[in-house]
Length: 296
Image (cartoon, rainbow, N blue to C red; front, side, top):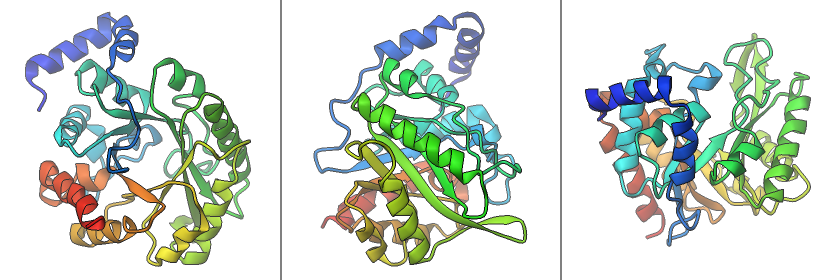
């Protein structure tokens, strides 16, 4: 938990010492390898606020409280099985100033311009980290969201921008974590396509982005039919998605997906950071246990 003194220091530094952030990037002790010795990766995601996605369950502004969000992230990162974080610059830099990212994997979130609920949501502009910053600040890779909606022309510039980012990251030897999600509009509302055909199609589209796939990873929903994952040889991470309210069911789905050979780990945000009962430590520990179970 952040003490009152730490919070006051963070706010003071933010207001008076902007150069401290560049120094914190430079002094971060990086992990030597992306994967653990067991070949896995477990990240906590906190890039939702930058896209205006603040709600968790019946709490419409759950992720709007920055001190509370940082407290929850610190609890998650304290678990030795959590390898790192996926976030936008503001969150990463708060954690850097709190000295919380030494020895952790840090993936920079890149396109956050498709604001939740906006008319242009699918035209997801790159408004956070760019490739040059990810390289300069010594981050461990970049993440991009690719929502595919066949009847929304906003998909086209997002496809192009993601392809360019995959290529640019690969040029620097940096992983590109692409999150391809097939959506359709139902009565004006975006609905995720969870059927095997939609997910397999999205996987194949994302796998072919850019000049090379050598550094491409995929971030995917846990499919009901694991055969969907046979659509790629690229390493995959299972995403947590919108919390279902049934933590046991979420854990079971993630655990099943972890048994597929292309799946290397998890990237989970709201489901673990804002679990029922708000016991973040217990939720993170339960998710960490899935790795042992999946490989036993």
